[in-house]
Image (cartoon, rainbow, N blue to C red; front, side):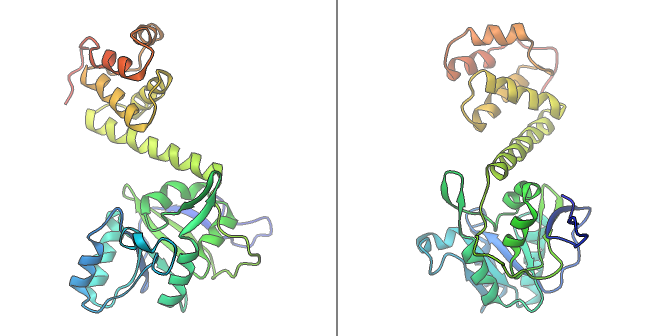
Length: 278
């Protein structure tokens, strides 16, 4: 995304960074659904912590301990803990000039539930992998709405630093809330699938393109979801295949049955190839 608009004014944008930048006294966000021990670890470092459970006082209060946690670290140990969380990919840093904990809390409560193409959804903005996977699809307007009184949200995805930033806090000019689009959802699904392929490729020491092609071929064979793509690709890797299935091979597997379970069984029984696997 080009952060400069047609007028030459620097706009809110999402960028990938070579390294994490220096951050001055940031707040931190943690997705407690993914990191349920974060609140306990905070209290171990700060006996009287400055924090907010974002779902408190919202219709989702019953899920507050599995929702987003906003923290303003007080002790040096707590600051170290969440800085490590930023580096390890389980915390998001939030920064803005003169930003208070209450201001940040109020802003993030507005983002707890957002509109999406199929209706309102809980937005996991405190999860670094969600923002990191979706960010490149954000428009300048979405970045401004996401940041509001902040100047930056910073995180990492698989070791790659990213940042959504703007030169100054934004006061919304309209009442339009942040909304997730079809493009956002398609992009995050694409990135999630790519990350799955990368992980499998590393494990089986295969080219990433080979696993991505297997995903496409398993989808064509009727794999109903991401886990099924993984199961089918693992079956091929374990059988020693080190390249895409040929059209004839695809036809043979498709002929083993109409449903995915029968075709997965055929993949698991595929003749052993020449390649040794882990």
